[in-house]
Length: 229
Image 1: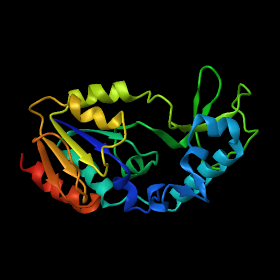
Image 2 (image 1 turned 135 degrees about the vertical axis):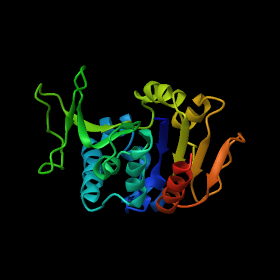
Image 3 (image 1 turned 60 degrees about the vertical axis):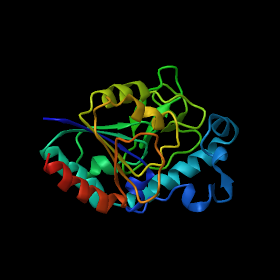
């Protein structure tokens, strides 16, 4: 089976109703992103940070995977599919995708602030966390999210996966956020690249096959194109 690698961004989940900072002009309850998504924010006001991610988890419980997510699962019948996502939701997994690498962390996981940084699944009956919630070793728990200013620990693995791709697909990302945006540079020179996004995205390569649609319609078109290969 050919290796199909898919890089997804916020546009992948937007049609499921996942709101982003961009939707609200970069604000949440009048707070800038720096107030809730940086190491400094965590050290300065962990209560506010917890409240923000509690709200994100609550919202995640109210939405479902869309036809775009489901279409990527359908592709597993024809290809060895690996998904690299910039999204922190679990909609790919809930749709049934078997292999997903999260670059920016996962909403439904918490991480210990211990030196070992153990990661714990968020249980459906415990989606709210507060200052004072501790891991079994008595260290505070923080959201398992890669905040602005932090290294992206999975970027090396993502790079190797892109290098192995026979086909690369990019869905719903402006390719402005690094280091994820640089992943395209690691695709082999003869690897075809498909880009699904309704917006104009300027990329300095003539290898791009554009599908100027939202994720749901675009994945359906992609599915028909790739089935013919």
